[in-house]
Image (cartoon, rainbow, N blue to C red; front, side, top):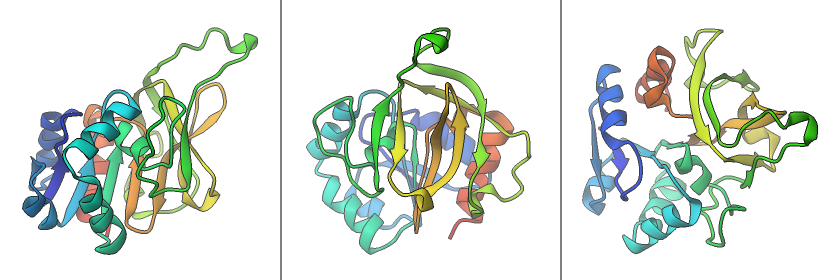
Length: 206
């Protein structure tokens, strides 16, 4: 069973529906006993960094999520804001992140020559795979994913960068470390490509 962490932020219904299309059993919950029984976990998210961390803290979920991710080593996938919350901090706010990845969240900044580029980065874009990983199993070479974000994750450890995406320069779009994975885009909105990614997380990633 895949459990999506329900902390009041994210497209929970869309993620569950896409996982079901992928043949996976999935529910959304914030109940500690349900989270502890999960075979795999997804941390979704839409919105601001501080608001997301505050919701996790208000629900008392941070110690449990730290235990499940760092000690029990349950496979964990962060999506969009969920990935950003896995970093140490964000330029968007003052609240400390989960710090699971050696990274921080920063805002897109473009020079005059790039003034035609809009923030947020919104729409379809490709990924440039940097390292082999089970999450990419049978992924089509022309895979495109749907992005909506004004901030992105900047890793301090190249070994944790699985894929990059170009938008006024390359940024880290998929990160991974041990049992922890995160994608800056929304696989639940990315049609067959997102379906393959979620199917890989459900069936291939160990």
